[in-house]
Image (cartoon, rainbow, N blue to C red):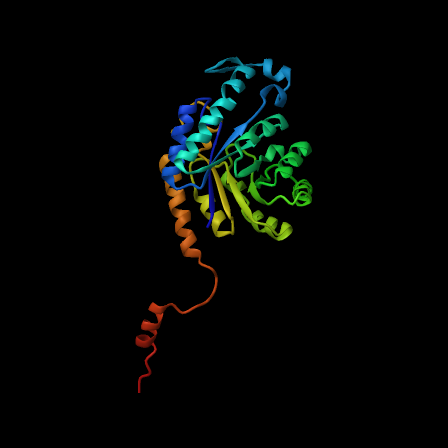
Length: 277
């Protein structure tokens, strides 16, 4: 069955109550897991960038905005407890080693390497050392860069799944290039999923499943009108519910590929293959 990840990311806008509502949406839609993003803002971005101007609900600098979007470890403890209550897995994609080490306390089942972090060798190694099943996004990456990351995971015997992704926000439909799913599968002999950033439509995700994607990750939101750079490329409640419904139906429709005669076919066979004299 296709593993469906509801990417909350930073769409919670630093509000743990909004995060809970997004978790509820993921659960009600039938997703398998929710994912967040974690950054140590002062480590990920340099001072010049953080001091530069940016208007947001939290202030007038990039620092204000970035810090406003971050959940604290205390708030992640609340999320951990809430997800256990709701019986849904949760995990994070960390953007720096400090965050990765800090999040270990929650003992989540999965890890994620974001496309932007694929070449962060120290972080990739740190994640692989944990030996948790890891989803590795491959946007903005060359085949050699993907191969280098795969070699690290194989070295540490860490189970992983690649995810085809295009690092365009939002992604134009004509850039999806879903045949890369098969390219990655043939090259690395592993499961390959799809992480999408297209606006509104979930057609690309459904097509990805038809082409063999074993996992689907899509951003979710309560409303694309909410503040945030990821909100416009997220699926609203109706969209995520329909996407999960259609993918679950595809699980049934695609089948296992074995040619058999169904019991109901045998009845029709008797009627339709009669020999007339």
